[in-house]
Length: 265
Image (cartoon, rainbow, N blue to C red):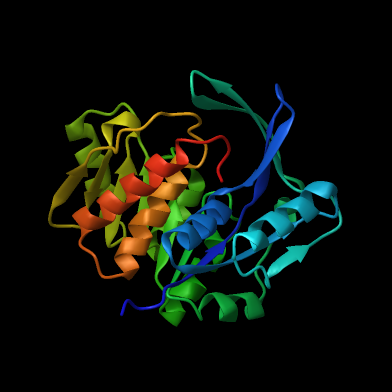
């Protein structure tokens, strides 16, 4: 019987608002990874903050409806974070981002205790917890971090020494450039550095070997959440004791499901 998986997602959430159609979908990197982990058959919690507006109520209800533990999702006076989005040729194009109450999000000691009761913590560049990573490392809980495509962001320098599994988005790079980049990132602390490459698939490096995996072909409706679902699949495989190639395959399979509908989930 497979081991029960408990993943803790922590950090940003936002409503993805499609201005042209008026549609609004709950999302945000950690939230998405938590929801996709449930879809894969694992368990997940989400620690973060929403506002007192209608989007905050919608976010809480939507995440809870997917089976995610929201016992550590706080509510603060103000507006829930919003990302304005358009779709062009099946690809998402981000407009303005309104951070709202996420700007004041901070972990409490009790939050850290809660996170450390899980098998792995996942967060990202806008999660506001980079300064808390040393405390998580000291407690022995593995950390996965999505750096997106911000390869020179100051948060990278602060976070990466305390990250076990580092994820990047790096479309368009040739193989040698990407191998050089992943080698340099892995040398700074992570056990494994992974880059998603859009239609070119993904590449990973564990300090001794590079691994490459393609995509699972599908009809693309919306790319929103595709990278997050890859991360969820990869981490799900990892927590099940799978090899890196198998984790990459699970990531690609998970991503292909998400690509076939509108919104992250």
